[in-house]
Length: 161
Image (cartoon, rainbow, N blue to C red; front, side, top):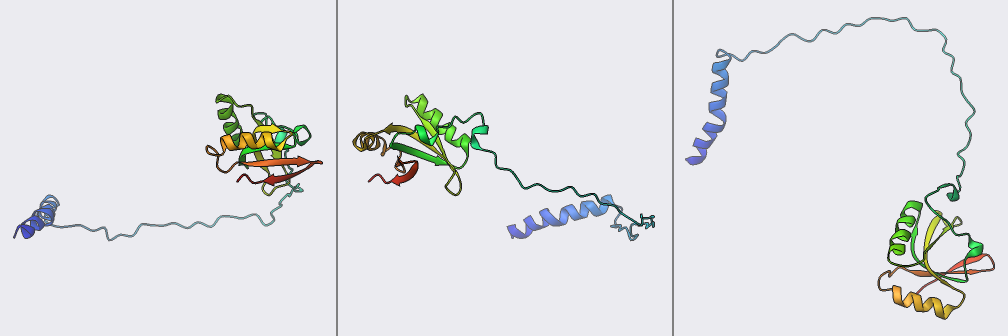
């Protein structure tokens, strides 16, 4: 019984009030909107000038002033990488947060990977035992960290277990 009363209040009363306000009739506009079509003159010949398209050029990452990059030749044999980014600004952000915590960081750009990556290096050493000391101290905070090994101008990745 209450449901019927609520339905009457919600639907019937507003319709009654609307009908009274419009004079008891609901008017509909039976006229369609008028559309007018005019024919315009079109040019008979169109000349399109095309420019020779040049292929996109690669901008080296050193051209971005906010990211200071370390060249491969200046990296020691073993480097502890705590983050890899395809966007240099993200690498710079992690590097700055580590500098704020007291670490000396480097960013190495590795163009041979697909996509090219910015590597954030937090520790470097010429001996494996030294780099493992740093790796064991940081692996709980950065579980995805790994060692970038540089030998004879070539790089390879060493997992930290």
